[in-house]
Amino acid sequence: MIAKPGRRDLTNLRAWRPISLLSCLGKGLEWLVARRLAWACIHHGVLHPQQAGALPKRSATDLIAALVHDIKEAFACKKVATLVTMDIQGAFDTVLRNRLILRLREQGWPEHLAR
Image (cartoon, rainbow, N blue to C red; front, side, top):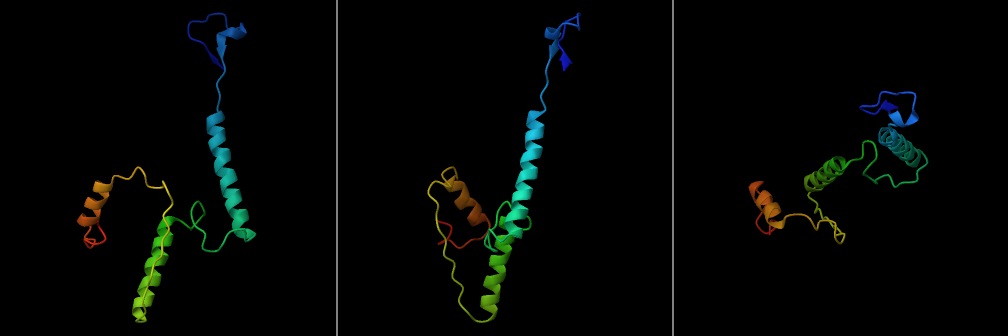
């Protein structure tokens, strides 16, 4: 409880303001539950071994590294590498198309891919 400013009689209950640490506690509890669920899913084999995202040591960066590794391995063995992707409707509605194209060109992507 925090005393309200300007209140002299601190024996009156209305002179105090309750404080809440609920948001802090909620965030901590959310983190704890998420870690516990991730551990349980991995430990009990609920998720596919290649499932990624919100799991320890399975981020999007790890997926990209694995993809690049597989492509390099295929090329080293004189094989063809093919990537099939799926578009989820509405997932990238807020991406600024022209800015994305500019960034791809700045990074040296081939013109037919940066259109």
